[in-house]
Image (cartoon, one colour):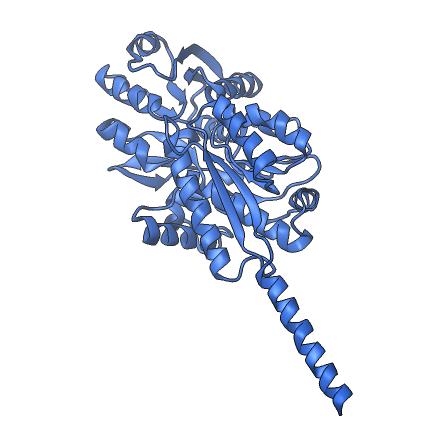
Length: 380
């Protein structure tokens, strides 16, 4: 009898100890590098908000395998030097197991050597094709490649029988990468670039470049940049009375661009992830359920719609969650599981990574949208 009581007693003690160890399990630390302030805040703020919203939801539901997530966010301010300082802190001091971000191509390229050396998986939220091409073992991305955006615009232009274009690109990492793809694909697809102009990230007037374009025989203008430059271009186009169709990149796929451009935004066409026109997508679209859930959750929490850029962070967090659930929380296991991801229907597209592809999307990740009466309309 006494032995039976002892067995029960020790069993209870063991159970309590095990329960205590689960409760006391340390959190899984995830790093985040976002441009929350500065000129790229329209990217980083929704990314920060989205990532924190998801972490709160995951933790409220019990975490991952009973462990809570701890999101450590660093504001890079869109500055490559601050991004490098931030990534070193996350790796050396905070001991994160994975990193999401940065928000911009320039910041992402700056931190890649450090992340690769430390062997920590990073999922960039920036668009530049060079982030994952050529493939880098520890680097993935969720933002659709600028190469895919160019392909989508050119596909549309061909249908409109337009083959003479002028391009106007910003002289930063995003703009340079976009220009490279515009020139390359124009040559491959039979488009003639009539005028190849650039502007600086801090420029406040592009009338000189646009006056040259106005005097050419171009049939369309493609502007490649992120706010506020493209909004200035749109206003200058209207002021100069230029009637050529104006196309923008996915770098302005948020309501912020419409606010900055005002009436000059009317009629502009650009490639974007489906999320900003989620309610216009057919019910059979594999992304629609996730997109509407995200948009509604973000609206409820932040009183504004979730957008294309916040969607990059949603995809990064959910891809990490899936990888940790399947393989554990060691950096190597997370990396390996990310690379095995197939047919993940997210906000930015349906992702299928592989050892040869750490971007995971095709041009079908983009739709073309047009601005009509200060709202997004799907181009069919």
